[in-house]
Length: 333
Image 1: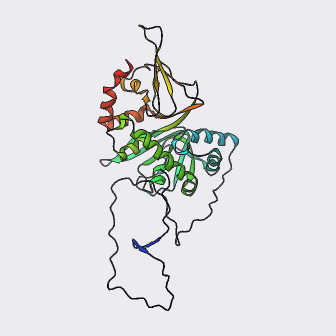
Image 2: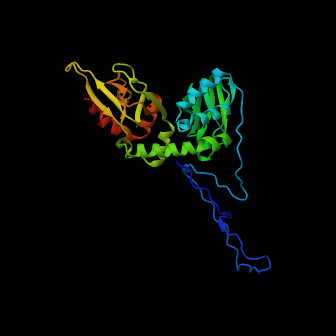
Image 3: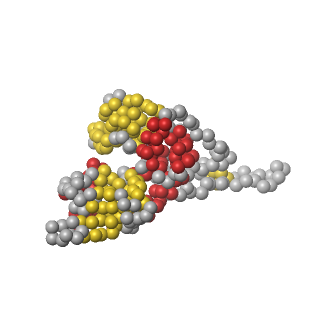
């Protein structure tokens, strides 16, 4: 979502304080009463991503991101990983390279090591380049693994996006290599692009019939689980007959689906445009891909993708979502 405008007035105890333009000799009457401070607001839901306010007591300063040395191979690996992540797709390459230079590491973790504790304050996000990390939540008093992050995944970004406590603990499942990005670099370089991209993504997904019954908060949770993929013209995204591991939504551009059947020697063609989805059938039925899909836009198409495990979890949590997918399986017939 685009950055909100910065607040240019100062506040004290929630009350706006206006600058006094009278001279120092002028008398100032004392108020008859002092208004009580506003009551605290109890927040029960995730808050919107918002810009930080700057003023007399919180001056904006020129930010100098840290630089941690890396080998060319390490930098290239991080460039490839971050360029596929939804968080970083809105950045220009020069800004992405600044972010990569600011990543501290490599951090070597052994199995059983816990790097994030649910409920703690968050001051960094992490990128996984080797190994596996379990995301663990306390459910009904019991710690349960809700997601496993593997090479190419990142975690810890929600606390930075929403200025909220850690939503889950993260523990090393098998020996892992991580890279850490601090909050200051994230806020100063990444946040504006992330907010803009999230708003665009919300607009696209809100218009998709698949998500018509999903609340904005639930939709934001789904966005957090999506990855952005850029596919060049002519690239085969899925191939008929192969095992399916991902669900896709067209974010920008077009793809061409083709299905070969025994009844017809010529393939049946279907165009998917922005807001359309594909790849769900193989995940719902645990069956091979029913069609091939190729990137047809020039020079490229942008897709939002979700892996099998996340797709199963999200459709299981939202009965309306699962019901819609089941009811529309026949669109491929």
